[in-house]
Amino acid sequence: MHTRITRILATVTFVMATLFGLAFIGTAVTHMLDDGAVCVETDFWRNASLADKASTGDGVQESSSMTRLCQDGPSVGQRAADLGGQLPWLLFSSLALLLFNRLLEAVLRQGPFTHAVAKRLSVLGWVVALGTPAAGLVVGTSQSWLVDSMSPNVGFGVEIDGPMVLILAGLAAVIVGSFMREGVRMREDLEGTI
Image (cartoon, rainbow, N blue to C red; front, side):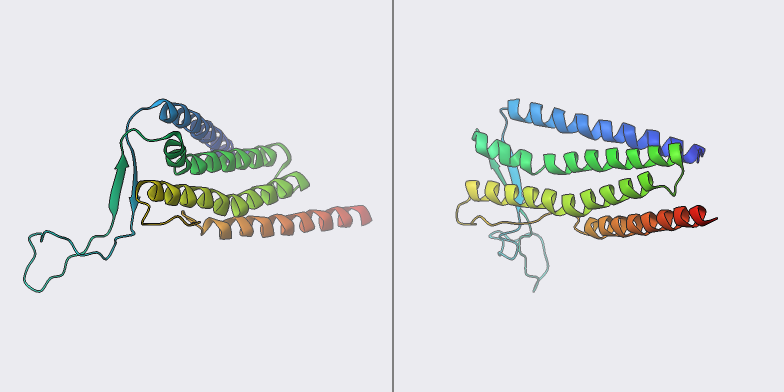
């Protein structure tokens, strides 16, 4: 199967995977060498009343939604926790795009209904299904620790942050990959009996 759109998509996914990988490395290096403040947002005080009234009408109650905390001269741990809120999704995106590129390359070389394509689709599905909560856990827990390091009364907890709906997409890819694998096996059995 040599369609133009598949070739273009394979090239685009490879370029995007490379860019996300470079962004991962660049962010890690520049952020650890940076000596600026580290900031994090928390919704811990989301229903707290505001001390000063904004220009609202009579009978309107005001409350805060997000609080931004910034630490000048952060510790190495705070800087690493700040990175933990950014890097996991860059790494996850780069890896998922690279695996998708390998899937498209297999489709271009061998066609869409082969063992290699079914296997690569299943691998991509498992990486997305398991990588999504793993990246979300690192991001959420890093942000929780960072908030706790700046405001100990908030408390530290294990949290998951990010689009968990990607787990369903990953599981769907695993299921479709197993269907494809079974279809390829049935086709080979049929070709062997003719």
